[in-house]
Amino acid sequence: MTIDAHPIFAALKACPIVPVLTLYDENHAASLAAALWDAGITTAEITLRTPQALPSIGAMKAAAPELCVGAGTILSVDDLNAALEAGSDFIVTPAVSSKLLPALKAVSVPVFPGVATPSEALELYDHGFECVKFFPAESNGGVPALKSMASPLPKIKFMPTGGINGDSAPHYLALPNVIAVGGSWMVDQQAVNAQNWASVKATALRARESLQP
Ligand code: 3PG
Image (tube, rainbow, N blue to C red):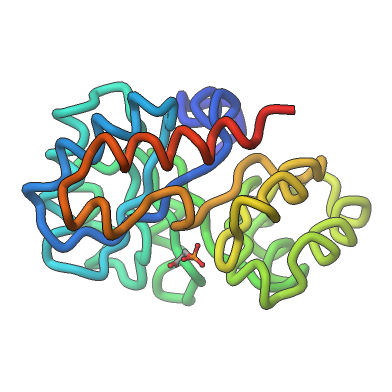
């Protein structure tokens, strides 16, 4: 997938923070999507870690049609097929296996495959992936690691995820090789559980606005 060839890249330019969401109740999905969109969040990654994930993807897209809703924690070809069938706008993986790679290459929506090292990033770039997920970002060296990769790997863009928070996000986003950051800090899980959508929206809005210079 060439960077900029899909609407998600415009969405990430408009708001470069990607909420990584694990949903426990699909009845929360529509209100959560609306709250995020109202807060100016343009994308969301739903992790395939609960049975509610797949139905939630469709419910979120129906409630906020302009929100780009992707699937994360894709570990197998079966996960991938289920996520695509659910209507995922993009695919995120924490890592890539030799079984998963050919299936990911055949997908027509954007894929952000997970890498932890420069070698993995170059290997995936050679397979056509210009933008990869750097995971787990903080424990793999965080901002200094990505900064060190910018010159030797100038064509590869990263979406770091894992351990990032509102304080560190701007430092990642200031790097030339980072197109967006992912994480869970901008969504208040307790407010989601309590279905306090005004509070969910306020937390997401604060996270987005804190990125403004
Ligand atoms: C995940 O896979 O759970 C994501 O990387 C989110 O990580 P975070 O909760 O540390 O932001």
